[in-house]
Length: 372
Image 1 (tube, one colour):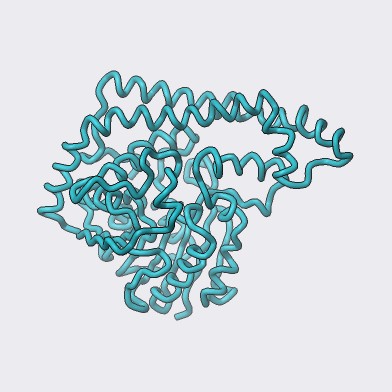
Image 2: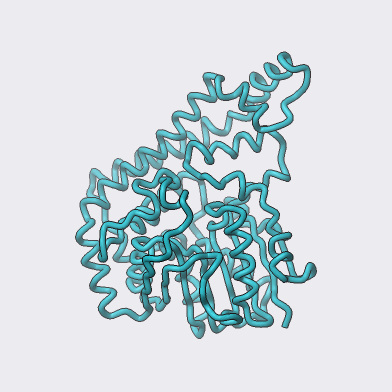
């Protein structure tokens, strides 16, 4: 199943809406390939020499780099274009989503009435404050927006806008995030035959559904804190004929029984979490796993400990300008230590890079196996 599969919960844009979305995608491609690609040279030829002249040494930190780059006209132009491209992307998909809002709610009700899987919401689970108050990725209304008992808009924005976002970032379309992890599991843990699977921070469910296909005898669960995203994920899975059990739960306090899963996962969730929540998720992973079970946590490859001051500054752009409050926290987390602190033996922990099938990018993976 390729990334961005079609299903009936994805609305069809009108001719004009599709044309606008394709224009924005082309603009984001251009910014990525022909503007952003030259920012390193701008730093080396303009910013770095300027800093060295002022201070007598090369920049040592991301903050040092920022003192000369944020007032550089070329970097300012890139930054404005990059931000505008993201804002235009959300505006372009909003036309389609708001036009079809009532139709999407009708479809949710239809799928919920004859579901193979299930949906359980809990109003007491509210998520961390940044999740409630920040429009993550600039998504209109953020993840936690909820217009009522049949609302699915936050999930529709997440998937429909996310599809354009991934293509604008140059992410390959041959393999979803879930399929990346499934391939990793089959290569590293070929004997694993899970009967119960948990996806933590499942969002709209695009990474969850592939586990139903890959492990047809397993019971698959997905949890998140956002109610409208979970409604959408539930309807999306039903539209694709996949039985997934979604529930509104906290990543660091899932309230599932001890040793109740064979496989515990997350996909692009860690960079949305504080270090405390990520540590809690690792502890939950250990608690929830049956002996011999496996946990795998995949996320974007932005490990600051591997790179210089320029890279840290450059990749840190998203924290402020793409509303990613925990971006730098994630980039400096020691996921291997967190897994060991959770109880996994040193020898059972694996942390490293794993390439997308089409080599379009590498992912960061932190994985471990609970002793049998």
